[in-house]
Image (cartoon, rainbow, N blue to C red; front, side, top):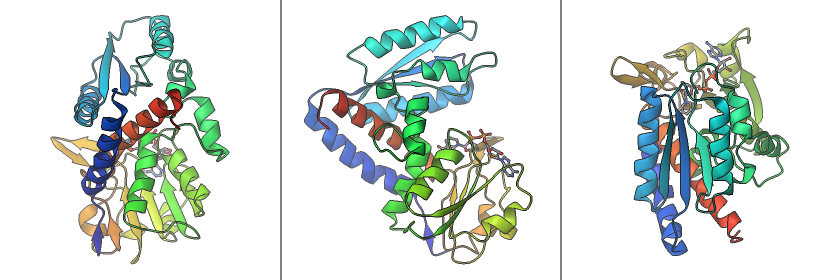
Length: 281
Ligand code: NAD
């Protein structure tokens, strides 16, 4: 490995710029985070977003519902937040407990406040490369990391493992819009390693620990590990870092890779929502 792609360094650089821009506003961009139930990992992620957001000068409201709440009460709260001028961004922490209609709930968010980029209006914008709208934070973070390390995308071959709405799909779309030829691998792909070895840029977003072994990579590649799985008290990615880092040119660690960038990207989106609402953009 020649380069360790350090997400914390990139996060800090973006956070410094964001804090400076927010300080100039004189007002705090405000994010509302809706949590349903008390999933422990969701609570940790929300805590991280609240600490980070407040550190860079935003307000973060944590709106909690018990998992027994009727769905229309959540939709009602979202409708209220859509109208609330004090609130610029609204996200629903996923996954929701079973039985809730994730699509119906995310569709209730005003697309102009949908800073997680999950509303169909924002998804369509991304698919059609129309610009504007909001790009899901993790995918945005992957591109910020590549840009920070000046890894060119245009004309490159890229492979993405995973095609979820939240991660794999938006990553593949963003890479394609920036001029890469993208192969998307998923559970139905016959020979995933044969596909990923062809890539110059390889993004793993499967949620399957140590899936990516030496067989999946080749020298010269850039490998981005988006996977986050809790193993005992350790967080592990999709890539067998020990083995793969000895082969490829550049690689992200887990933790400390895309995770920190997901949080900062969300607040980049919040600042855009604020600026657009105030006609500053
Ligand atoms: P998901 O379960 O919705 O999607 C996983 C995708 O990977 C699916 O398309 C599936 O077909 C594919 N896949 C799974 N196992 C595979 C295999 N063995 N071979 C080929 N394809 C396979 O998950 P998600 O929400 O997209 O999240 C993916 C991972 O990214 C998870 O580990 C999640 O925790 C992590 N994540 C990290 C961040 C971050 O900030 N770093 C943010 C969001 C999600």
